[in-house]
Length: 442
Length: 166
Figure 1 (cartoon, each protein chain N blue to C red):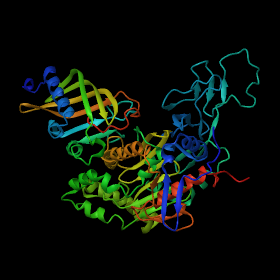
Figure 2: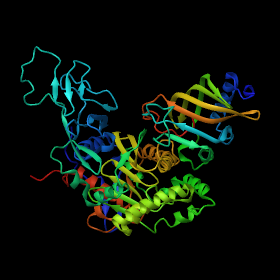
Figure 3: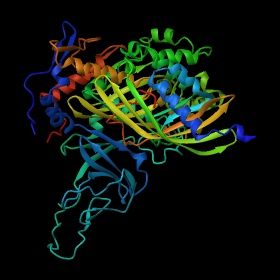
Figure 4: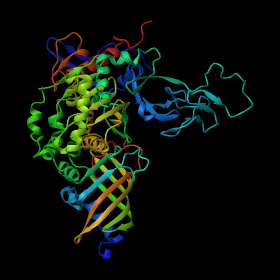
């Protein structure tokens, strides 16, 4: 594996001219992709799953993270752990189910048995092995480091990595707190998964996931759909409202490459932003939740949680859309020009059936493989991927809203700026050049 | 006189073939008229364990439209600005193995298999699965009260996204 940092930067930043350019090789080169795997994905915290998906001791689910087959396990001791899903004997997967509850994992090949801590309990034979063969534990399932923040569990393939807490940093923790505050009890993942793919470099979708600039052109038909739906209600005038899109919120680089678009789009928000279409009972429920948040956290914070649409990227590949629904989206690159996408719906545990129905309906109305929004995004990405590869234009111009500040990783711009993406790319570039470390200093 | 409401297998087949024809011909504004005012069109998530009993109000579906969004979907996909289907894909809907699964009052339940070939740009993908309909007779016409599809897929990774109507 090539773990050597690149010598030459793939971004070109001119702070005087306020330009920020990305060499397009970053979107298609196999060499760059191999280095990204080693220098970014093997160093950063990567999303694995949510606590609510394995609530009971013995619960597990199997998931792939950067091509590694993992078991995400709620152990009998009550810890959330992860290990590789491969028998230490001859390599077969020890768990073939997507999810379940079990006291042990038994390999189907020769019958080796592991407990929920990954400890080898039986080799299914009385003969042929020295009794203390696993005294050092090398035949236990290899563990992967797991850390959790607010129900979100991440893995890190670098044992020397800084903690998840530090990796996220204050601004992302604050954002996740604003999500978890939406429930008086706890946030849970609802059943059902979106699993689809896009033939494009993963960073195209990262940029797109919190891009305020593309809304008008790409999502024109969605805005027309809203305008139609809202006509005659107090939410009518969608296009007039979109014209004031820059008035509130902004594009924020949140440090360590994480970024956020906070904005106003008049779709309503199940947490605390009611629209007429949803009816009086829902108004009451949403109003009560808003009141709870105001009482607990104060007016300003409650307004932020309830009113602002937040599209965020947690570096390098997790998207949390806290918009008309609350979605967790993991983008897994599979090659320089292809990605897999998995997405789930997050909701307050205590939410009424009626509001849950609205939440889920909102989700599929815009997002996912058949929504009125995401597929149009996907076609932009496909189109860009096909066109950039064999083209004399060497640089992508990502300059909108470029700030003349020292550290672009904490800069902010207007809602339709690219300032926050510049923060992502700056961190990306620094990791690729070895100019920043995500390891603990010993 | 429930006899009058009964829909025969042959009628159901003819009706489904007509729906397939409208979809392949991209006559979506006519297609949406096949659906009753209280209808639904749904595709279960590919990880759903019980796709014909799951409830889109409780779990995430790939797609779950009620009549107003069925109409909106048809209208949207006919616009030039629906980028994911511009230009329109070439599709071939094969609806087969049509069976009457039961009748209740005015409703006839129909099961059928489906394969759709879709070519967009230079890429061809397939969607295959089972469809379950509830059909009703309205006057002399047959209409769709509900249509739910369970795809025989574990993800849409081969297909990418599902931008066409199945």
